[in-house]
Length: 158
Image 1 (cartoon, helix red, strand yellow):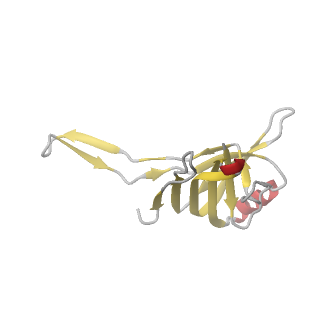
Image 2: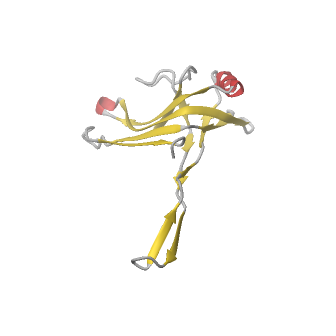
Image 3: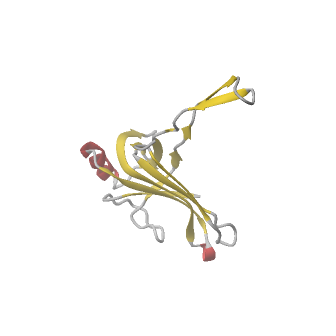
């Protein structure tokens, strides 16, 4: 499965059909949690208190390439911009088709770490923070059709 990232105003080296200029990724990590505390009592013998969702920063890795300096420039200048991620699978005729998509608004690149090993190509670990998100599951199934499920969340209004 291919994972691609698009940053407004920064062109990557990706040349996959429909995703020219996107950044190919080797890993993607993002998540969230909601703390819950239960105690005995209440009408049914139990009650719970839940906190506001806590969403993590986005952490990803990619191979260093000719666009690495553009990402450093983006991070140093503190540019806030939308970023998009598409997870691709083989579609009709083997063409890549998106089955999972995420957009993070007001995303800010807050860290870049470069690593390498002897004889290996350098990798970059990037960390983004963001204000709002839209997470979309495209239920393409084997017939490449189906409904879409969308979740939106704005950290500024939570």
